[in-house]
Amino acid sequence: MKPRVCILRTAGTNCDKETAFAFAQAGGEPELVHVNRFISAEKSLDNYHILVLPGGFSYGDDIAAGKILANELRCKLNPALKEFIAAGKLIIGICNGFQILVKSGLLPGNDTLEQEASLIINDCGSFLDEWVYLRPQGKCVWTKGLPAEIYLPIAHGEGKFVVRDKQVLARLKKNNQIVFKYSDNPNGSLESIAGICDQTGRILGLMPHPERHIDIRQHPRWEKTVGASLGHGFLIIKNGIEYAKNNLRR
Image (cartoon, rainbow, N blue to C red; front, top):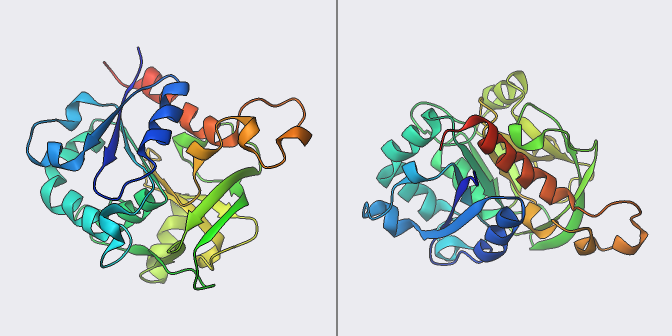
């Protein structure tokens, strides 16, 4: 089977089509769906195996990056999301999608969806658009078999990861929920954190863009990369597709 992938979009989402292409290349069956179609019950999350919150500037990042769509998820789609997660399905939030996941309370994750972390303005005070090295770790199903260091692009103005208090950070460490760390912290994130997951390892949020490195030719030095054809981002996305194939019923 091809896992059915919902690429959630709204006003300001701008990475939805390239994200859908990446999931299709990895063997999924992606569909771009506007959030209002779920709110109106025209569509149901039950019909999908993977929910993807792509990058962009949802609702123009008014108030704060990702905050409005985060509120819609928490207030209007809470029961449907809880059922989706309880069914063992997968969620990934990329860049703006990561901002949405933490501001909706889906990450790090708690029963009340209380916000415990955030992504705030970079220490440099400006938008960052560059490639970064990342060190995978933790227990996330999306990172199975990744190299010790991977290379992905970032493009964000509010990517500095912070937590509410020391207890939240301690819980992230205890439960192995820190999934990616920057090798050279570009935005001032707490302990160089670039991505985290929930306690199940099935919900992942990260600031770098895996969908922008699915082919080795997207690497800025691809001509010097010998013996490789797949980008590091493709490996992340393929992990999600393979997990859905092997563990989720049709």
